[in-house]
Length: 374
Ligand code: SF4
Image (tube, rainbow, N blue to C red):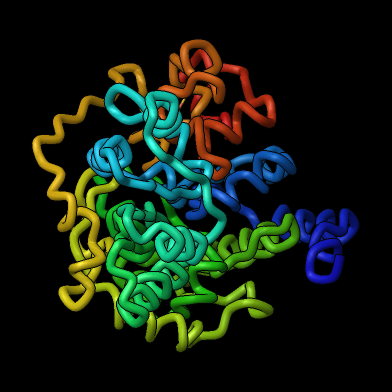
């Protein structure tokens, strides 16, 4: 398949690995921001092929994983109300809230439907004018534009029974928060290429300069990942810290102007809580006042949410790159994809799910082993 198979070529992969080996003179810790990149890395064993001392730390870029428990609980409360049709992408249905998930709400009589686009939810709203239709709008800069478009269309077409429960997050403030953590070991970033295809790269030079870290915009196929690593390592070895685009077939510096204009129209930047991490200033979007009538939190006034995370789940540390999934005591025992304790075991982009799916089941037993497990 064009643009896919040629970025999986084993010969070229070996060449890139040779280049990385030749360049490395000392240990480096790199963070891949996106959960899609984490899955490529673990599925292909890229982390195990890298030279000793080059460590990949898995970042917080899994949208399902970082949606805060309070928002999940609000979704559950809204979905359980009579007269509501609650629409969501499928991977949110198994994310555990404080005491149940959306599957449980559906089994108890709630009208919870899986859709493949927010516009499907809009169609359901037009077909059911006597019902309240709510779409669960979560994710990074990648899913935000179509969600913004759905709200924009609802307002324009006067579809008043459509609303959205919004929990959108933004990548650059998360990179800033990771670098601001006192425990941070990250020395360079593979930035998420699809996010930059929407937003461009203008937010990154200031971050790279202030934290003195190279940031390389990277794609998702094995050769993309290896090329991103090669460019980060090359900068680190030279003492450089600039923004570099290793994904030019999808990313332009200005991003997608039409998508950005839609985002600016519908959303406004706000502080946002990240599950397991806490509140990161200016790290999210909410509906702007012009669209308040389509804001599910405003419409349903869900209050008195008392959240409770499972004590055994260490997904907050996983999401900050402080812990590898198989270092969690519950990994593969009390917590599996069939009965997940945390969202990082549920999502198709979650690091815990990647380790479980691709059989990284060995648990480190000593600090030395633990630090070398990647
Ligand atoms: S393995 Fe399960 S319990 Fe442990 S951090 Fe991951 S999701 Fe949480």
